[in-house]
Image (cartoon, rainbow, N blue to C red):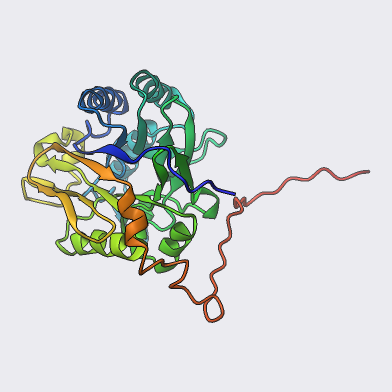
Length: 322
């Protein structure tokens, strides 16, 4: 049974709105480690990076994919994307873990993941959770890529609907438009999430309403984290497939929300930067006095949610006796 009591009364969080070195895993990991060190010096204990930070959220790129056709230019760009994706565990996670362990922080990092055990062509949009000891405590693969994301990412399954116990509460969350899946949110609430992480690429004004709704519905702190990316950050070889003329490709919109749906910090637009907040964890308990979405405000006699958390395999091997 999960211990829902916290040994700390508050936690300082840092939401990092930054851009990667697009399609360059090594440089982006180095930048991430520098940022982790920087915010830890400011006292941050929980650090959140954006969706797909390593090696890129390839906004506006078409990978030369059309219905019924794919082109060689797109295949070459895909190869670059694949080669710079992250294995879990692997060299990139080892470097992140070393910095996390040195600074003794909790880190949630958005990556594009390729499977260690399979040399296939499937990538996943994933968040990795690192504990202050540098160990990987869990990961979550995006359940449903949105729109054209379905061309480049596979679907996760229920086996990675992770929440992590920490001394400042239960940490978990969903990625970008997964947060518009009511049943997925309910599954997370039922796991007792208290600090809800929502790394994203969504920049619409309504996204801020979404963050506030989740906080008020789940009676949890919500940390929304996005990137700030401009056209000149794209490598030359990718620009041919960029379908935007604008200079600012992703404007950001990171924010920190209280369990009563109030904005604590942000939204941050138009620049790279860090949002800091000291979260009073007692606010979680107080907020649930009159609304507990999976407790006294649920009706299990009327509604039931079944969640399949078994890892899905398309090939199941079994040895048979002769």
